[in-house]
Length: 205
Image (cartoon, rainbow, N blue to C red; front, side, top):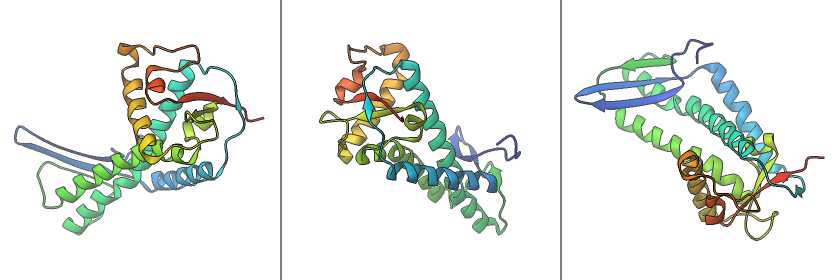
């Protein structure tokens, strides 16, 4: 965002006290990055994780995996998702720009807001879909971890169970400082036990 002087990657909408602020931005380089990132994600969905090894992953390792995944998914979804409000603004004004900001409402804002909702859904699916395939997210692949379901390290989650796991993982990580990790002898946090999961270390030898 700063290197290419775009001003913004993604879109934002705010209506407060009678004031309006609508903006969106992307860049061709971001789209090339998004294409490479999507290709990497697809490769991970096709690649079977290596053998699971015994060991309790450190809390810092798990936090790092989440931060990588959050940044990875947000950067891809934001750069691609911004194309929808950019296209809508171009259709409205007759002139395409990689960034716009206006302080008034337009009849295209409803569709642009819908695109933001779709982007949030895609971010949730980024975390949930690999669980239904028995695969790793990019962050978990980089740090060498895998979320295993209760019926074996090679098993897969149902879609409902994957969404539930994703929800509790977000709540658990967000409340880690206030609620405590409360890990048991297997290194499972309270939300691991809530969803009956175990985070394992992956051996890539």
